[in-house]
Amino acid sequence: MDAIAKPTPEIGPLTRPYWDGLAAGKLLLQRCTGCGKIRHYPRPLCDACHSFGHDWVEAQGTATVHSWTVAHHPFHPAFRGIPPFTLVTADLPEGVRILAPLRDAGDGALALGTKLVIGVEDNGEGLALPVVRLAR
Amino acid sequence: MSLSGKAAVTGVGDTDFTHDAPGKTILELQLQASLAALRDAGLHPRDIDGIVMPMGGGATVAEDFVTNLGIPDLRFSTTTPLGGAGAVAAVQCAAAAVATGLCRHVLMPLGRLGRSGQNQRIGARIQAMPQFRTVGEFESPMGAMAPAQFYAPMARRHMELYGTTSRQLAEIAVTTRRHAILNGNARMRQPLSIEDHQASRIIADPFHLFDCSLESDGACAVIVSAADVARDMAKPRVLVTGVAEGHPDSPSAITQRPDMTRVGLAKAAARAFAMAGVTPADIDVAEIYDCFTWVVLCQLEDMGFCGKGEGGAFVEGGALGLDGRLPVNTHGGLLSQAHMAGMNHVVELVRQLRGEAGAAQVRDAEVGLVTGYGDLGDGTIAIMARG
Ligand SMILES: [Zn+2]
Image (tube, rainbow over all chains, first blue to last red; front, side):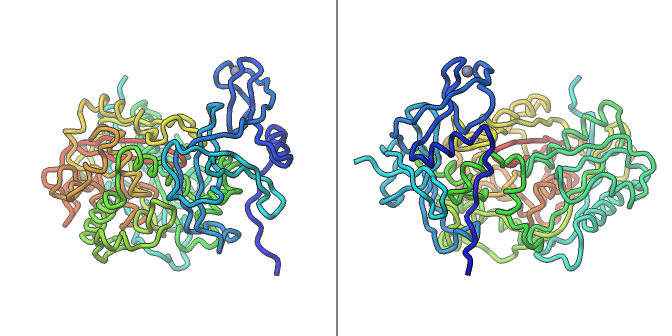
């Protein structure tokens, strides 16, 4: 029996480097070449200086907890049997946030500001996604 | 020119709310509610010359109403696609249209087959909506694809910052249920206790099942008319004295929002209160968009009924009940009456201000407000007064 596939991103030319970066094990962030502001999620225009120009920089790899939720109800058939899993909203030192599943710990280990490290993991279906772990 | 007092709600109507409208289309339900609103207003369908559709890109369009109601000269039509903020946005839009003389009587129909619309459950609906494109690409692959999951981190952060508890969220669900039980047209009629809430399964922590709203079938319709015309109509006028819309920072991704405990209503509320010339202390009854209990608490703070972080204490002890400090969601809301995307909140506010709210009537309700909350935090508010 074919399993139902998890949702896949609709990748466009603008966001392709982000997804290619994850596939290569790197979390890339968009940086404005006009004023240097880092923005996330990827988008066409810098809201500070209104330049379209941008390049990509690799995130330092650290983060802190901004908030979280524990998903108990699977809102998509491909996630049936997987919950509960913890999704962390994490502050990056670059000034943006990511959402990522927590690995190797439960939500009981979390508080605002808890230190994290960022990793990249295949979702089991060939899509690389960011994950977070407690910093040692 | 201020919009204050230039428009009035002159007709409200609704269908029975069910979990399964047998064989009905959304259009049929909307037409049924529209006819009820027309009867309520004492208007003939030919009098309608404006239509605002709160669910942009939804199942029906203004042309359907022209065709079925036999509207001879529709002079203004638009949509307000702000999700759950769309119903009150439609009130704002209609008020502006009648105030500027574009038209005189605006019909605003909203219908849903939220429950029986197979394959259109919340996850699938969200994926198809352009306002969710960003989270659809970057968050849904991780399993975050429903409003419960997008909003839960807002509530969790509020809890961590201010000590807000799940039992305080339960207070909102319990009071709202108490109001639904008084309503002849509400889906959830069994008593609910804080313990029932706490024992209910967790959907997306910190949200339990009873923090979440219903999926319902049915429709509501509201008619907004020019205030001078409304003076001679069937029912006492309910004037729109203040109305505003506000969008949160980072409107497409809560994850990136500078302060995720604050929503678009925080920007809109002050504008609406100033337009109406009232303060939160003047509000006799409030119909507050309640897709989740947390969203009510957040809006109470963002409107200034209490400070940021004080919402938990504010709602305790039945404060939102009919005899409480601020009667809220007197019809049972989206949590316990039906999920009509907030148009049922507009209908209820009008009934309260006319004194037509039956067993849930707030005594001497003269000034009230209704809010909308949509998508990832868009906010709308209308302040209305008997007049
Ligand atoms: Zn820039």
